[in-house]
Length: 367
Image (cartoon, rainbow, N blue to C red; front, top):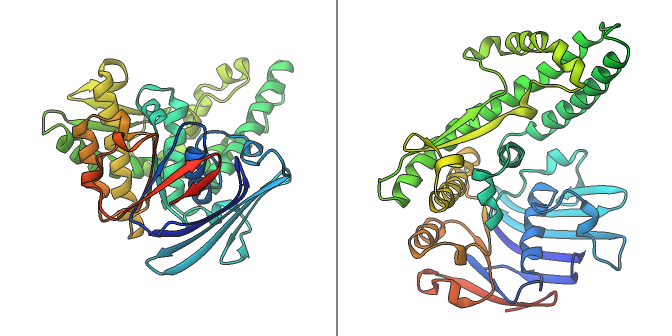
């Protein structure tokens, strides 16, 4: 997968930008707050229809306009593709080769990316919500229909929570509809759980191998899925889900919220048998995050048959020489990479091949 061109109109601090990105490594240099991260964010948004930094699409639209447009042209293993994402107060529209997609989830996966930024350390030491978002964004790129199922689950979850609140205010009477909401929640939830379990199993295989390489075999990384309820036999997962909902029904009515389901899942990391979130040093947590990102690259290639784009937002300066070398050697010559940095001194240029260097200043990019 190779992004040949990116064009922006009224996106963040870019009023107009047309940029040929025809190098294997594209390095964007400049002071902070000039638009380097905005540029990488636009590529991420073109792949996933949303920002990695904010949930508010209006923040992506420039101050002096009512809409924003991202255009990209990429070469994929099955041919060239032109992608367009339009953002406005009325919502988002996405086109593949000029054809508008009925659902945004049908557009996701047309361009595949792996983003690595300093805040990704939160995947290891942050809240379960951060880890669920990580899972959902990555699975959505390689599993057709996953994001649509997730949206349907979220809608049912909101409606079920509202119904639980009415049951509490009415003293628990009129519970007839609860079984209907339970069945819908479990139906969508089972699909999400199965895909998460499969993805984490594949992620573990790659991350364990990569982590051992970075640490010269001194550490073993284990990535495990922690669902909101225990199950062993996937063939009766729906029944397990329904049973668990029945068991916590009274507690849910009292609290007015759903206590079981994928919205309460988590991801656990263990280094040499010890939980990395609690007992890992900052260096171990950083290495775990790096191993996950490198594992993502290989997992996506395994699933779709080609490598994704790699976006490195100001992370090379955060890595020691050993980790930086490991990262560069992983993507060199096989993954088109986009890197931001405040200066060239933070990048080991001697290890980069076919690198295009760009200067970013106040929303303008020059090669």
